[in-house]
Image (cartoon, rainbow, N blue to C red; front, side):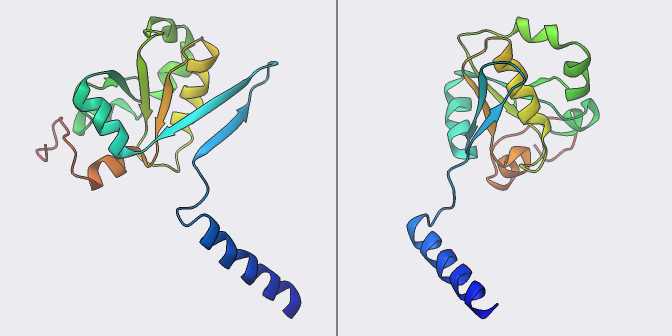
Amino acid sequence: MILVSAVCLITGLFSNIWLPRGIPPNVLFRSAGKSASVVTFLSAESAYVLYQNRSSQFIDVRPAEEFSIDHIPHAVSWPVSDILNRPEQMKSLDEKSRIVIYDFSAESPNSHVVARLARDFGIENVYVLFGGFSEWLQYGFPTEGNSGLS
């Protein structure tokens, strides 16, 4: 037992030295079909650069009530429940545009589900905001809505 603990401790220490920022946040999701859908994460800082350049479309998959309180300016509200009930609305996205999908936090699987669905509809430039809207707020990036915090 002590030997196993020592090996785990040493492995953890070397992992922290080798990858001090952690494992890179690119995750490969396997779809039911023959191809794989890759979800690419985007940091809040990188998303903000895209926001400033107006070179991307932001999609908020939180419930409409949360979106109305606060959201990234110019984002579109597409609650995940609506998308799952009518996935064909994905066809309305510009296939050549960068699409940034976000939920409230990194722990929510909804943005990942919607990103995979967009990829299945042929949208190539799909990104998930790593850390979600909560990280956007932590950086103090602009928001709009009815919260009075904007």
